[in-house]
Image 1 (spheres, one colour):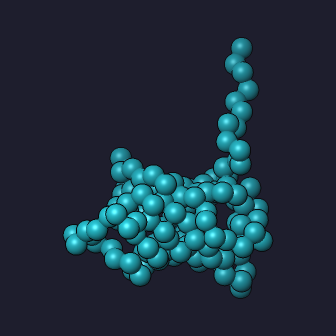
Image 2 (cartoon, one colour):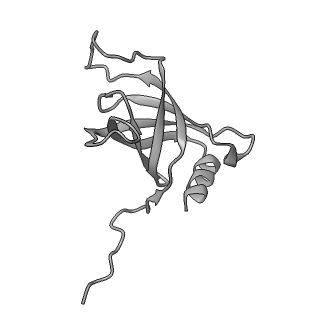
Length: 126
């Protein structure tokens, strides 16, 4: 008989795909790279895979170093006229085997966000 699977995380993850607008706010101080495809202030698109109250998983097309600070904005009309924006830091990255939603995946930790905006985001996903 199988045991019931339990969520081991403090905050449960909710799966849903939403397009995000992202801007690179700041790279880690100890990393410099003239060959990087994106620079501070550049914008790119990402797709959410899941979200929780403290973090999210995204897929995207450009490799970003861990500890990179991003400004994320939801560009989905289901949230209404009020734009949801927040800051998140890259905690890990990996190359995807298939590039359906993007070449890379990244785990993000939400750093600066309006609590009501995060609640709306989590409610939308759950």
